Length: 180
Image 1: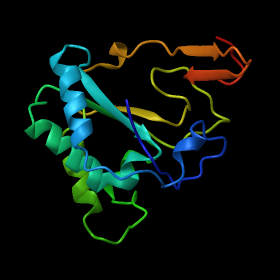
Image 2 (image 1 turned 90 degrees about the horizontal axis):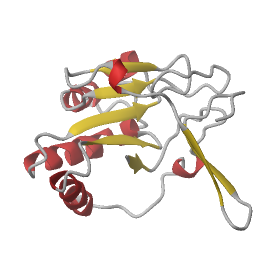
Image 3 (image 1 turned 120 degrees about the vertical axis):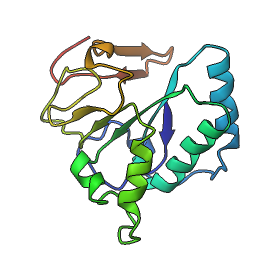
């Protein structure tokens, strides 16, 4: 999973508040490319999934990273994405904080050509789901290639880690009202 920093969607009860501000150290992506390819060549990963923050609010950079990975030898890498935007929004180019550049829809089409799957739709804390990869009933899993079927994505899991000082950290896909 590669987490992109920054999101302006403002979903109530967003579970990844730390990824909302558009701040951090800019990168040319070379270290990411090298690390991902090393993991792939070592047989440790089959692909990379983009999340955030909001990957589509950094779509030109995301596309550049995907193309660099492909050009650098990551031909067989699988690519997935979690985005708060719906398929209709991105197809109409309505995903960018900088809408109006005119190339949003074409950037999406170029990204989509590389994606095997995407979970799309805003997080809604009041519509919990237990479907594979989705935390809200309104979210849709789109399969863009023949690489995966929905049944390839397993049951949602939750991990609760409790540190020595008593701090608890929940990761995974918790469903409102259900304990792991």
